[in-house]
Length: 507
Image (cartoon, rainbow, N blue to C red):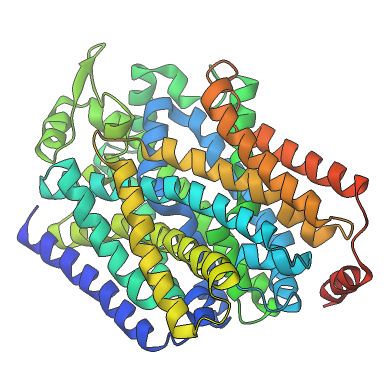
């Protein structure tokens, strides 16, 4: 890495830490730390939701999947785009309104408890445990992505790079909480957008145009230029089912809760969905162009110079596995641009990684501070005490994620897919039913969450290899069915709960 690239990269990191320091001065209570006092504008909320959603997966995981599989992996992008739009369209406004009606709930477990008037706290505790379980895997995927970036860019070992990336990300989340996360996500979302548009355009021009790229990829493997060739119906369903995950991702739906007004939802939806669709296009084309770029022997030599392993397969230069394929965006950033722009693009990759990890750490820390510590252990804890419990939780959860990511290089996509399925199947149906079905009961929600989480874990461990269906599909269906059946078998919700439901609906 050149000196100019390094300086640009360091300036960016210092800027993010400065935002964390400023936000720490505006964080005086747990609501500020966890939800920013419900004062996000539509632009910040939309880009923050998008940036925290897409993460290093968009710049590393998805291009890597496209590189390995060709356009057949693009079905994931289609499913995500549809899911994101439906989430903004049907969940955002209702959730923003209902969480305020339900005793001004500031976390997902908090909303579940208040929505069902659960004085036993059991629903809150179960929800918090699910968050801590799956966010540990999700955060670990970001740590892996950060390690890939630092190891490829600074010529250092994987484990050393893992620690350096983690320290940077933890620092500003620890300091500033939700405001730091949202403001940095806004900046990072813009950076990610510019990078995803610029990189594939420059790479295509470098290779002589789009027709030349398609011809080259077709010569390597004709199936990679076709979305349906060699793809089974189950694999298409599995890819499209990624969209189901949106309804249950705590780090995304808390952005809906933090909007300053439900009236901001249409503008935020337009900004967020437009950003996402164009970003997905950029990531898909980056991976596809990478197939043609790597196959050129001259380019293969340059890739080796920036720490990307290249092997010979069937007479073509290729990246050997998914962990190397996920570095294609990093390689393009360093090889196709001048040092200053390269520094900005590498900062964009780190932005994507940071923007998701910080949100995940924040939701996890709020689960500990609000849903365990305050609700069960110390009901009279001061706001300052709760903020510090949240900050300490950030450090502990991050350490667990680092341990999970330690050792041999992992696949970002594999870790993300497991956590995404876990949240989508556990919380997605319950969020939807909570907002749209008056008769959902506490027991229905509780057993739905447990059955969804258990299905994902069991399917992933014992069934998926034999039956190639993404675990979110059976998990989502079983969660919804169990929640409805248990609710219908039990006592109907109280008149007070029904009245609150009607009040939220009327607003």
